[in-house]
Each structure stands twice: as structure tokens, then as C-alpha cells.
Length: 99
Length: 222
Image (cartoon, rainbow over all chains, first blue to last red; front, side, top):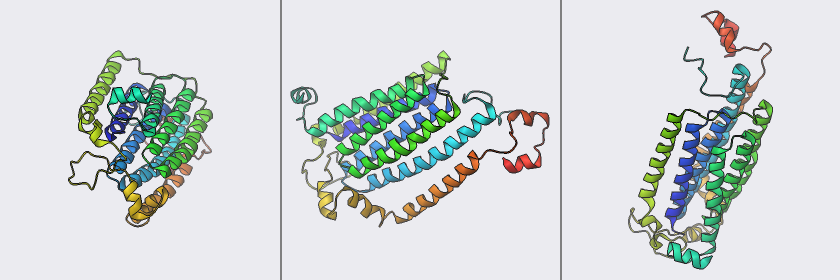
């Protein structure tokens, strides 16, 4: 399989995730779309690691997964906090900082 | 199917090609489903399909360790966390899509431009038969070389399997980032525990409306 098809696929996945971030307003779904984008980048890194036959790309994927796990833990805690404070997950409602 | 692939793409179909096509269709379809489905639980389950498809793509890229990590960490831990929060908050039925037409058109146009740019960049040298993976194409000569060499010879160099190959780099050259990631995980865990702790008195945004100054105990809690 030519390596470019992996790049194209991951680019399209990234685009779909970005599209989701733009059109969804639910904070949890927004988070899932960010995960989609992170996975697309992971795919790019793994494909590049295979292309240049080095371990570095795979190590980066490993670190991205670690950071994504930490990010999800903190982000979901924030979302739970937000929901208890505001009673909604709509990210378009006027925020506290804007007042 | 092999003949079809040969005819359409112009190179011989290997098992990797078949794996790529199946998992790519799965990944793209489930990604679109995550974005489009209104039920949050359905979107989360589609995200699981997407993550497993990407694990299959990692297998096709000869990264078995990453594939296992993807299934365990993403498909297991992270998705359980997502579903747990969805169930805890009971928000599985709300559908907060942007209904503003201008925003939707702008989002669609932006996505189209981005994917067009990506296709314009990569269709061509990187998708020709010259950049096929797994062939013994010799040593890389220049940085702009678009051929794919595969990991076979790298495996030979380190005398290891996928996990040993990754671990060798992780624990030698990338030891410092590895230790830092341990610190990061600890900080994230402590932060999540502090953030998710239920307080004795419920504080809401409405409490802040009454006075411009935040009370001292609230400030400490925030």
C-alpha cells in the first residue's frame, strides 16, 4: 500500500473531526471529535514511522496516547463540573468569563 | 477483489491493501457517524468502532504494540470514561447541533478546503507505486525520497519485535519524556480528583450574580 493513502485517510479523519468540532455544541461530543483528530494525527505518525523505518514516530504515538488519556481525565472532570454548575452542556450559552 | 484493486489503484493487492481498504471505510464511516448522530451514546459507540478501525490500520503499518495500546487505552479506558460520564450526567438524549445555517455552511466550506488541500498535497508521488511499503528499495538517499522502506530492516537492526523495537527507543533516547509523562499522569489524576470532588454547598453561577466580589471561601474553592 503506498504510504500516501494512509496520509490521505488520516487527513480526511482529521477534517471530519474538525467539522464535528465546528458544528456540534454538546461538550462531550466536542471532546469525542477532538479524540478523532488526535487519532488521525496518530495514524500520520505511525505511517511516517513505517515510511522512514524509524521508531520515533511510534514513540510519538505512544506519548500522544498518554497525553490524550490525561487530557480526557481532566477534561471530563471539567465537563462534569460545568454540568453541575450550569445544568447544561451547551458550549454556546453565555459563559462566566464573558460577563 | 484483488483484480479490482489492481485495476483501480494500479498496483498489486496485498493483504495489507485489503486490510487498509476495509478499515479505512470503517474508520471514515464511523467518524462521520460520530459527527452526525444526535444520540450521544450512539456517537460514543461509533467512536469505539473508529478507534478499533485505527487499531487495525496500526496492524497494517506493522506497529502491533501501538495497536494493542490503542485497543487497551483508547477502546477500553478512555471510552469507558466517556460512557460513564454520559450515563452519570444523563445527557444521552440531548441533541445540541448548531442550527445556524451560516455556521454550518462555513464549517462545510472549511472542511472541504482542508480536505482538498490534503488531497492536493498527497495524491501524486506519495500514492504512486514508487512509495509502496514493504519492498526492499535500498537505503534512503535523500530527505525528499517518497519511497516507503518498511520496518523489516529496522527490525533486523535492533533484533527485536514490535514492542522491543518501540521500547528500545522509549527507554534510551526518550527516557526523559517518558518520565515526564509519568509526572503528567500523576498531575492529571490529582487534578481530576480535585475537580470532580463534590462540595458541601452547591455553588452555581447565580450565586455570583448577587455580589461583584467573590466570598473568600468560594475563592478558595474555585
